[in-house]
Image (cartoon, rainbow, N blue to C red; front, side):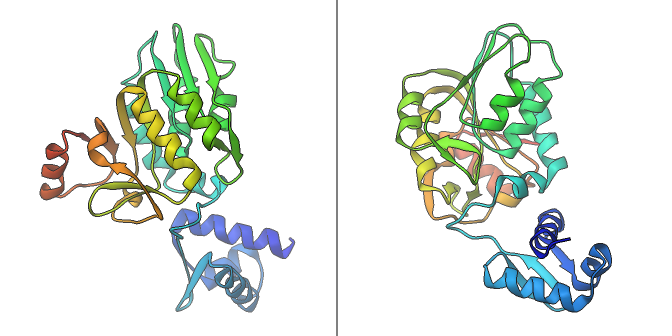
Length: 255
């Protein structure tokens, strides 16, 4: 195995478990602990991990988005439960925007298994469009724009302008972070106007977000939680947070 491949395996395992030991990695990858320590040193220098006693933890940047590949590996079961609940919101003859993201991808994966009658899916996610394009009863509209390699999605001025010309019955949206004041945030400036345009074009906006996104910051603020109609999450909100959701007129659904 090439060193670059081994380090990608280390990152993949960290995205699944968040914390991992040197001994586990050495045994799993069949190399010496010293080799793993050198790999972790390099990954730490790149700002991807932080070494801890006997292992490493994943670091998360507020100015750089994790790769689509690595995000897709993280909290997969939670995302599928969120997607399962989101699926109940969809009916035939609807026009639906599906924001780029790994949780919305899980929702699209569930849609493949059902019968639909004239559902229109608009998306800026290349993987979602590819997944749904051949599903009977689903018409896919791919939003054009600049392709962001990190998220395999389109964004920027062309994408936001196209979205502003449309109307959706439901917008399923994701976010990279929700700060303590319940602002949705992003590390990618090119996505800010796209997400705002999606919400403005939708009759109903449903936020799909797992627990790991709460109480975090990214560089750019998108909008307050009050813009959202429904929050579907596995996050266990405190009574005070639930009251805040109510004050924002946001329906809180915990899966």
